[in-house]
Image 1: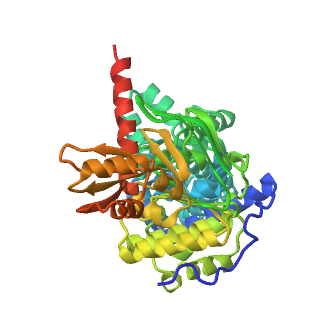
Image 2: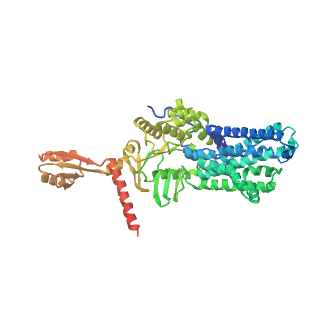
Image 3: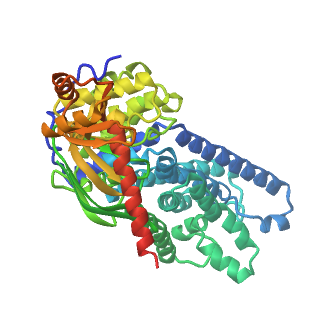
Amino acid sequence: MTALQNRPAAVEIGEEAPSVSGMRLFRDVVASEWMKLRTIRSTYGFVLGAVVVAVFGMLALFFLIQSFDQATPAEQANYEVAEPTVVVMPFVMFFISCIGGMLITSEFTSGSIGPGLLAIPQRWILLAGKGAVAASVGLVSGFLFSLLATIGAMAMLGDRPAPLNPWPAWTDAIPIVLTAGVVVLVASLVALGFGALLRSTAGALLTMGGLIMVAPVFAHFLPTTWQLRVGSVLLPNLIPQLAGVGNPYLLSQVGAAAVLALYLLLALGAGAVTFRRRDAA
Amino acid sequence: MIVVEELTKRYGPTLALDRLSFEVRPGVVTGFLGPNGAGKSTTLRIILGLHHPTSGRATIDNRRYDRIRRPMHEVGAVLDTDAAHPGRSAFHHLACLARSNGIGKARVGAVLDQVGLANVAHKRVGGFSLGMRQRLGIAGALLGDPAVVLLDEPVNGLDAAGIRWIRSTLRSLAAEGRTVLLSSHLMSEMALTVDHVLVVGQGRLLESASVAEIRERFERDVLVRSPRADDLTRILTGLGATVTVGPGGEVAVAGMDASAIGDAAAAASIAIHELTPRSATLEDVYLDMTSKAAEYRATKERTERP
């Protein structure tokens, strides 16, 4: 057995690290984090999960529309709105945000946070790189899933009237498609923050599941005024509030934006401070 | 040059490092030796910015590790064998690290070839043996062709072939002019590999010396048995040796080597029944040093406790 044959030098031994700007460093970190994301299977698992729940959500819309057609006009007047934001996006948001959380928890769980920090010991920059990737994945996926679900819903709704059909004209759907992207972006960063704080995939996933899917169920059992107050600040419900389109909740667009910013500040802030201060690996 | 100054680290009530100071000179292989729990891994982790010291500082070429941009070009380290995502291939694991430091993919292929993992480059790390993971760790450390390499317990858990590979690798790294700091709890391992030894116990530096110096310092004495022990004692004392007579009549001679004692005895026609040089093995020396440190700590704690 031979050790280290044919040593091909990358640079001369002892040469100082090439000086690079902070921006260049950040770009390299983003590229590296993107490669990390692409090269593990769980990423694709979560995307597949999002696709599956989206299909189920669309099936639910399909059955809702079918039952609408069979209902009496009086019943039709009281129908729930056939809005993908309600039946598709919360679940998609959960799966996509998990990718953001996994960006850091998979490293803590597998021990690869050690080499990761040896490569980029500037923890702010490493976390910012992960944040940029989580945010991009969140924004693009949130937008795409919302867009496709909305197009699908429009195709199924045809010219059916309100209250089932939320959009008198197709252009009315644009704001909510865009804000869905923004809210999924925030959810991904919140998951990254919880991941950095909890260092555990299970912990981060449970927290996000609790915030996105369980909290609305609990809110549902509260007295009506509290149901609205609590419901207004839940991540999925911020999508229509941020878009400023028909919804029963209490926040203005600015208010919804402020709550989103607060989510970011609290989760990502706590995660960042913990990640910077705590001993790693 | 790695400089550690007055490094103290507390984990809750446990004092892991107690004002530890030392220097690692460039271009030599330095062994960082101590029993389990002596603070070796903690020290390496602080040098590499993974852990924060309670007080004191550690620098590499006058800079804290976390101030170095693209540090893989200057410092390579292997800390844990379980330090890659099991679902990622060896190539991708290294490629992710390389990309973050502006190192090209060609170099990834080159280091995989160097450590003998080229044929499993696209296999997932989860299926690797301990020895293969250790090689992968070393490949990662060499990506930026660094002048300084730090390894934490590199032979732990490896089989004989793996240990031999690590030894020859360390020697290659040193021969290429790199500064190597490796930790181990096995003195025997160090004796074969390193030039300079730093011995730590209970978070404190017990010794900093070359392996040869330690051997010399702890050369003990020669045990002699002779029917004319009294005559022999007189002659050897006259020649400047220090002689101690044991309870069984055996003589312990310090300050003269076995051949000189034999010659002196022959010249005086004194029969010798046994002539045994007794020198402490490095292992003995090390165990002696570390157990003294443990006793010191225990006594200190007893005294300080009200």
